[in-house]
Image (cartoon, rainbow, N blue to C red; front, top):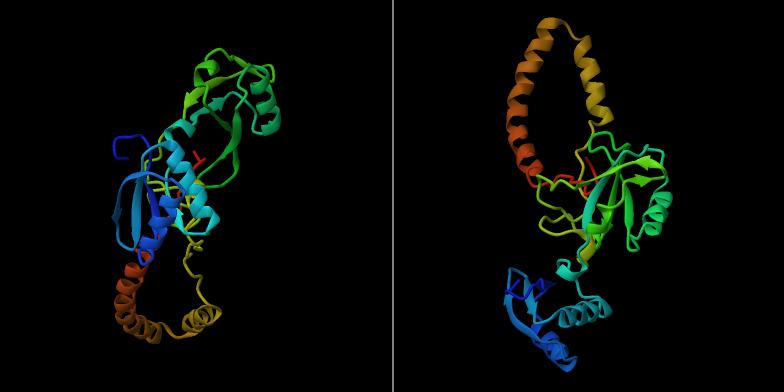
Length: 235
């Protein structure tokens, strides 16, 4: 981040950089450096004001880009324990606001495996020090814990790339590929195979193993390029 605390902005496309940089100059947007990174240009603006101006410019001309959150905009994240899973998110937020957390944002956390709601709630705020004074919500004793950092790298749900999140991504949307289910014809072939005598079935199985070994390696290669699913508010 070039030592300024201002994150870089990765602008997709390099062909029209000259015209884009002139547009930035006409808007008074100052940057310390810009360098190519593949088919994109990584721009390091001088100040948070320049950063916001450039983001607004890129959004106005619908230019694909991604960036990261400004340090001054980041919110502390804490997990609330002690509330029932049926608790309303709005009720929790209203209670937090009434106790001095005016900027509270609340989300219910979900299980990574079952996707079902958990009796855990995530609160985001720029006033984490005030949470230490809160002992009850909805007349129930609660505790606040720091949210665990995910072991996997962050993934954008918009473009499916790794290393940034959808909040600050304006790249083209991309649908994540899912493994294909066996076709009906394959299921039908399997049923026919089961009806064959054991000897014939064994011969067929041996022949199919040769084809399977060749196709498996190709399948694994394709699957290795499919990016996994990472949940931001899962436990």
